Image (cartoon, rainbow, N blue to C red; front, side, top):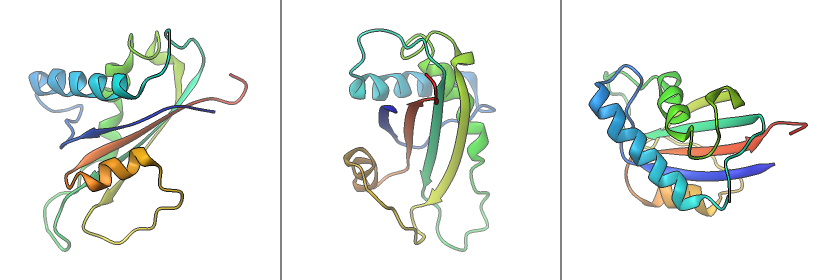
Length: 134
């Protein structure tokens, strides 16, 4: 069951970046999530979080591609106390990445994902679902 979908516009900050940058990024994530939230209270169920980082890197570039696994922890931490009580509730965590300059196919484009794509900048698309049985 889909509980929340949102985009965080701008280049993300990863777990091994400067702590001041991480704090600012977490506040940015919280603001984006709150804008999309329609929940009255904190969730107390097991959750699944799916993140996709849409990054902007010229095709054929020798620059390092972002490590999408390092994206998860700052977002999970940012949502604790705002969406759920404990990070331990997020029992399934997946992350992927897509280069905005490459070809890819999207089936069932949601208005939220469209917002990110039409922004013309890097962004993270987040989907929070309740796990089976929750």
